[in-house]
Length: 555
Image (cartoon, rainbow, N blue to C red; front, side):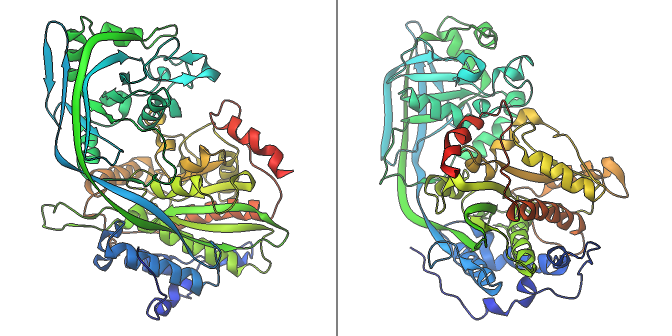
């Protein structure tokens, strides 16, 4: 366990805590909170968090120790209260599972055997902390999309017993192929790969393999390989054990075609599964496979601070951002091996400090309690926010909303702002109202079929029923237009995202746009903090029913 002490050197960063004159913007509204936002102190915090000294902020490393100390010192310096009793941290127990030998996977039919090549034809892993996880002669079932969605009258497991068997499923949901189904080309959570494994486990399956398709997944198989082929962190569930799959993973589309051929089927089966009324079916093949793993248990930490509400202290507005990045890894062409994560997500982490400072600058305390939650292990699968949602310090039934920040715009002000998950909650309407006041507009999401709503920390609040949103930087550059904004966005994705090149660069960064977006998120939180309204899920949201069940707890 890492223990943290407040160090005097942390408290010597006044620009993080106090409104520095240089770079302050005047607020025509006279709002003391808005006038406290400061581009220079934002840049200073990002530069510190993304420095080589912080070693890429990977959990379980000295970089985590420095990050937690910095954040605790920052929240203390701002005068915020500890958010977990007398502590500013929440322990997040995790297990690090790494392969101890190459995985194997083979399908055998009465006529042939199809042996697949690890990391070329398939990627498999386990969340079971056992030395060896082996299946031998396991029955295989093709279960369509692997979805049980009563609100869409869809059940791929209807009449099917898959206990102890391997299910093979397709990525995304039926709406990707037929716009009249589900939410059309906007992916629902039923299309997300994490849901496929969760549902297979609920059905009692031994293993679940997803057939990769670049268009339907929204990324190539190389992303699957790089994300899942090595060491992975998972939450430590030893104190609350739940059924887990023996194996889970992906197979390439060509490998899936070999599997279907061995079973006497072809790609027509995948096309049939795209339509309502499809009945999942056993395949006349057996699976044998193994994942050999070793595990290390450790603790990481969420950081949480608060401003207690003056009138409704038991109602909570949560601002969140993940503090972690990828640490030290494979060197790039320049020999740089530190994945600094300046934009992702030192920028969002620093933005929380700006918002906290703004609330402290207001002449009256908010009526509701405002929480500032800096979570760990987002890059490992949203683990820190998942742990908080599973072990909330404050009741989720009386948590009003989660406003999450993940990667600020670093290339200048834009006329627009965007968000993922159109049609989910009232928070998107609040966002539109706030940016309209500043003469801006909300632009539609570029790729709704990619399911970005399910890829950031707000999602763990959403699946617990709390209306949540992550606003993303726009692309309609204030002076150079949309083409320029898209170019800068694409440059970041191609050249810096999850690479050592994601570093703070004072010569090229322009945080005016990022600060503009942070102010809009702050304004939503301020509205909720000084009012008694409850944003709702919209009809058709897969999270509405969860919130509706807890509505009585607020009365």
